[in-house]
Amino acid sequence: MIEKEVKAKINGKPEIIVKKLHELGFKLSGIKHQVDVYYSHPCFNFKERDVALRLRYENGEAFLTYKGPRLSEQIKIREEIEAKTCEPDKIHEILKHLGFRILAVVRKERKEFAGQGDKKLKVLLDYIEDLGYFLEIEGENERQIYEIYNKLEKYGLRIVQKTYLEMILKKENEGYVKDL
Image (cartoon, rainbow, N blue to C red; front, side, top):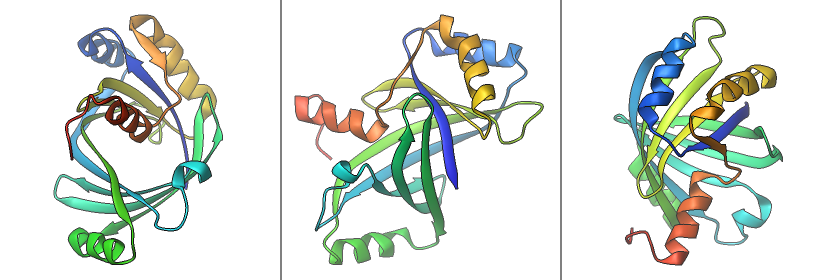
């Protein structure tokens, strides 16, 4: 699957963004608590290749995900391959035995909003521990993604190019994030 999204830091109040989403016809469709465990490869640098390996724990379920290199910057476009797993702790043990190490852990609460029309267009309000609030707009149609962003931008949004992993690692290197 090819993932297309715009990610923006919320510099204002997230409640205002939620109110505007409702005015645009988006309704809260779910709340997820996610813990994303990112791994480093024993033989090469994922960052240099712009790829990631993640084990996500989400509301009692787990998913192993490969994220490919970014193909575009403004709207982040990248390949994403995800597999649901019923035994994430065993997946973690396998990866550990193969030499993979935990690089970072990203903890978030995600509120999903769905629109009335295109079922593939989603807006995600994320609270990332140690980073704050972000908005992701995901869909297949880049024009639609930009339209939603442009309608919300004046309420305190600023597009960010970095992934949550990159932002967490930067904070860790600056000494702001508590140990894993």
